[in-house]
Length: 119
Image 1 (cartoon, helix red, strand yellow):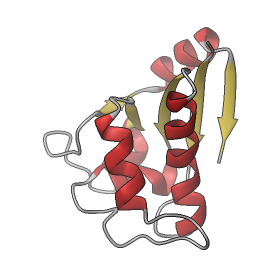
Image 2 (cartoon, rainbow, N blue to C red; image 1 turned 45 degrees about the vertical axis):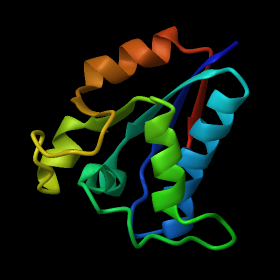
Image 3 (tube, rainbow, N blue to C red; image 1 turned 90 degrees about the horizontal axis):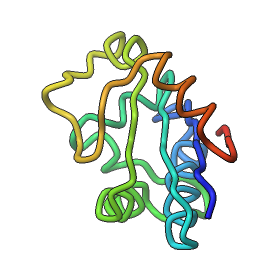
């Protein structure tokens, strides 16, 4: 199956677009693919424990439910270092599966993946 890099940039600024990348990653994993979530911009704030608890988009499941499934499935959640630190994310206190990554990590993953999707 395919290795898929899913880039996300929305957080509380757009609850629907904040949720869709997690739904895509969950669905990809259910179909046997190997997804990686790479968070940019406002999306990086969602690696804080509890940050996704009150995000409810339009006509989608609550982010906390989808995120719980993504974590349970072991899908990697990578947060852009500069973006996350600018938003006060503590690298020592993040949700499960979340890691701080740099541009070099993104470029390597992009080169290795079969597909790239951006939200």
